Length: 132
Image (tube, rainbow, N blue to C red; front, side, top):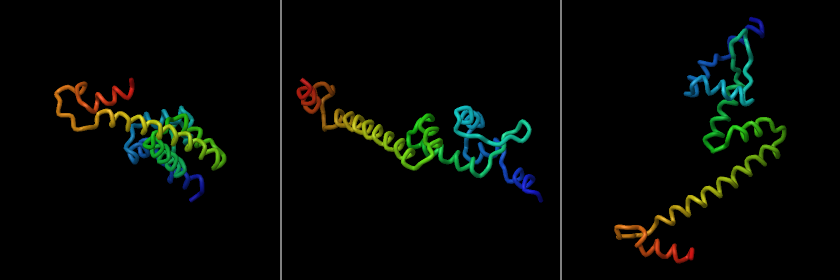
């Protein structure tokens, strides 16, 4: 079997890739339009290689970590590890800020308030006094 025939046999259709990752096909098309994926074309059909599957997995993991598509595109386009690490460091700092804000919100709602109204709770009153 020639290399070109073998290549086509080993490659996956958009439907196969979408099913493998539990995605609608329009998501893969969108990621392509955003420059995150560049599947080969056989006629008018997209064909995905193992490298493309790795990129899909990387995109999904990055999205689960809270990265936006622009940052994912920047990481994929980066030619060096330091350039990728810079994107990761920026994202990590954004996450730290979000975590601090979420912790502050939890602290606001914490306490053993037995009052019917949070605004009369001693814990809440203490937080108000700290602000004033």
